[in-house]
Length: 385
Image (cartoon, rainbow, N blue to C red; front, side, top):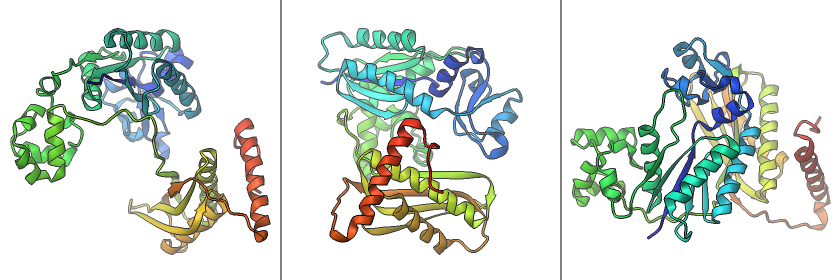
């Protein structure tokens, strides 16, 4: 029997901003882009949430809900620094840490002799007192139930305009009992469409799902029906994974105004290709498939991709492929709302240098020096003319 701890940092971006500027505490504010530049809410304070503002909401709508909303530009480098401090605390407890995102992680604490609840409370307190960050924690025998326990703790511990500091422990053997009264859409795998179909069948809670015969759920939902039945009974055998395979790296830009100038679009592709290539090199990876994403002003979105003869981490190769792909779908002077570049088919770089590849090897050495300079002094310290 395993013991899994799920940690979620409450309103993480906003919590970091409040540390930097204590005057924001208790006020409705949102981290994100400007409302007149198609900005969206990346995170919002609990005072803002009380007014109906939510993450991923267009900032223009958020401002309509709260005319006095304070908008704070995102500082992702700062958030990464705080995230690393939290993750360091987790790794000091156990090497079995699976980081899900910048503000969320699973820990397998099965082999730690200290009682799980005591360990978790000490961890929550340390993150609060030493880093000034609020967090919520769920503990259960598997990842599925631990994650849902965190969400339940958040909802049941809600305080006005304050982080919840949720804390929920589900005893082993009581997983199905804990899940039973909860809404069906709290279960992994139940999105809006599945939830609507379940409601048509008179299924509204996780317990309702558990009470249906597994075979009938499979006939209705295919293999997803089998997962639904198992999850509704609190069954989840996935281990905490300490390694994650990078499947793709991408960058995209939503323009403040629609762009039809070809030079501006090519410059954007150049900058995106540079950042994608830099991330590949930083992780000692290379990719074989270059893809672009392009969105027109009417929100029609296209993707195109091409597979290169060999894997690459070279920004010039990625850029040239991206420009060709853009030119295959875009008419002259056609306006663009969003543009993105990505690389997939990722693995370790394979480098074979022949007598005729001296030029490319010089280019690689130059890239390495540029990477080192940008890492030390910032990405604007040097760039191509």
